Length: 333
Ligand SMILES: C[S@@+](CC[C@H](N)C(=O)[O-])C[C@H]1O[C@@H](n2cnc3c(N)ncnc32)[C@H](O)[C@@H]1O
Image 1 (cartoon, rainbow, N blue to C red):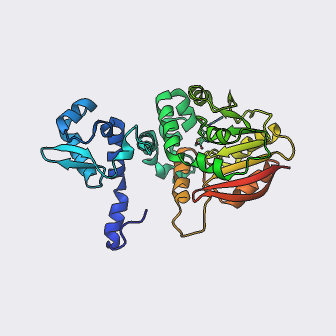
Image 2: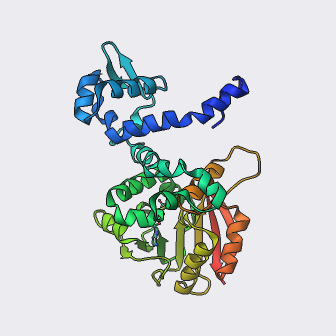
Image 3: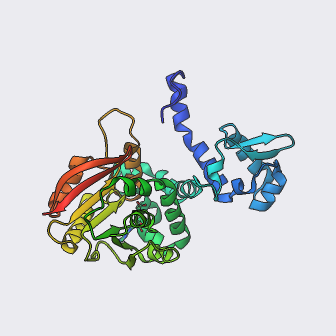
């Protein structure tokens, strides 16, 4: 995300510094669900405010500002339709990111506001602001946890199909997805691999949600990967799980995987890996998010290889699944 290069540096810096004015306006629009109320017919701001329990003047000013970014489009008489960029703000859009916008704009934004505490003290700002870790907070707040799972689906939509299409699953009997959320990845894999069965493993709430539409040939197991992971699979997957945790917690998770898998079993970590210095890299910003919110980090492939070795796995290679998703492969040594 570079500012427009032609701008004087001071103006470019101001644009970067005030980027949250835009992101918070977007977050409010997503929370109110205003895009869901817009169709082909322009809607008066008074109706939109009534339907979203908002102040008409304040809502008008937010939508007017966002219209300048193409989210909404203002027509005559303070009426609005969706703008060219507004579609994914709708709940029912196939490429919806409403859940993601809501997630980053709520508790996580409050934690980012305390980023300085993380930089000075090295501990996640989320814990300082909320007095609990993010997953501890989610355990006691099912509403935000449901938004988190929707955000994961919004963010990683397309990854499941890409993994299912490009990873060689032939030769495996049972795949365990650790921290597999609502089962999207296993559903994509198992649908295309009739020889394979699966185990979806996650916290209680995630497994309860997955029961509504479980992947085919799949056991649903609730538990805590810091205690143990289910045995019986010859392929373990960890997609966007290890980046939530510091090195010692990762080694605990990987150690529990090692105890559950037979010698020569395969473990695949799926993450965005940190690339070379100075180049634009979404993983480097995501790394800051992990630092402030979970206490985790994004890592280079060499850093993952070191964690694997500590836990009794041998790093055997990697393959790029998507530009921001690498499969780091290991064998139980
Ligand atoms: C960042 S999400 C990734 C979800 C999914 N693998 C994906 O790629 O969309 C991390 C997952 O780890 C799960 N999780 C967090 N703490 C856990 C624990 N102690 N035991 C099991 N699962 C946990 C969360 O519920 C969540 O589904």
